Length: 501
Image (tube, rainbow, N blue to C red; front, side):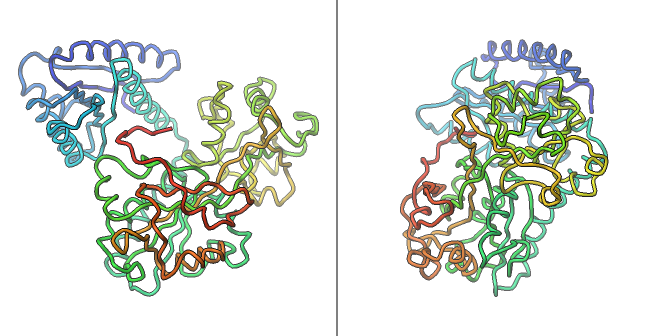
């Protein structure tokens, strides 16, 4: 990893205070990084450092900058536009600099604003982030820079084992892309192949259905396990590139079905560059399957000593347990970054200043994929815990009887639950009054819930609203037994590029 990261700030010369704020921010971040022991220093430059020669700016942006920050208030001047195009061209050619764009929130869409948005969408793979005032800009730049630095630091400290895990994840995503391309070019039309992608909670939940069973063996399908946040863009690509098909049964492609223990937002599927293409062709349908309980799995030999034989633990006590110096000898296994299960743990423990990360746990932290009955940690009787759920756990280890499940509860004793969803594309049909899905997906939904036969006919689902995501109102039954679960609406799309909560 480079020991220094060079940043150039581009924007109107009148944004003097903006540059001063960001310069002070970088100085503060460098102090934080030194305290954390990060081997990196941020160096920020702007026109103030380079004089009045535009050629020097251009060369610095293209050849010397690791990150270029663009700030736009109400319009983009010609020089800033040229700098943006140069940075975008350099990024496409050699992979750098990284482009971070920030635009002040606006009340009225003007031709100037629309022109800037078009420039962003056509010339870069990145999107811009809104900010409301200087404090908000500072906070959002800090968030993005911190993310960039931590990713670089984490990458420089990756063990060979984790590099292999990352390589496998990259290979899985690359395989998805290749399969899509080949099937679009050469795939036959009968039948459509269902491509199940996503997390283990939904896969294991669906195993209980007699007509479905193990998704890895389901007819006319492929099942690939990847973190939730990796799977959602596949649906976006599917809808955008589904060129006005009139009958989904004739689609020459895989039909992606995302399996997730996370409730999606519009921004998980869309950004400014793909929004219009997406909403002109379809929506995302979300099917609620049920709820999964966060569950701690602890080695039996230490259960009584650590938890006094209890079968549940509060989030407060779990945070205390994880931070307690007397338990620093215990190995901790989690699901992958970006998975719904780990995200729920992060949210549940955040109020107690507990972060589940490599930085917090050091070398005693690892992933479920490294834990099997043949693992050294099992054979040598080492103490460990797994932060999993009822449906998501290292099943072989549990089946060996080596650990005991402990429910995670709140202060009132209620179980901490996460919802399980299927997300799939619905193509507009019959002048937009119906969603169209392939035969194979229709049959799959019938197996999930036979009652869908009364509302899904000729592969068509009535379109009840114009939302980007048609999200279910989770029924009270343990599993989805109510046809209405396809229809309740989420809030409408908002033009925020940052995640909405």
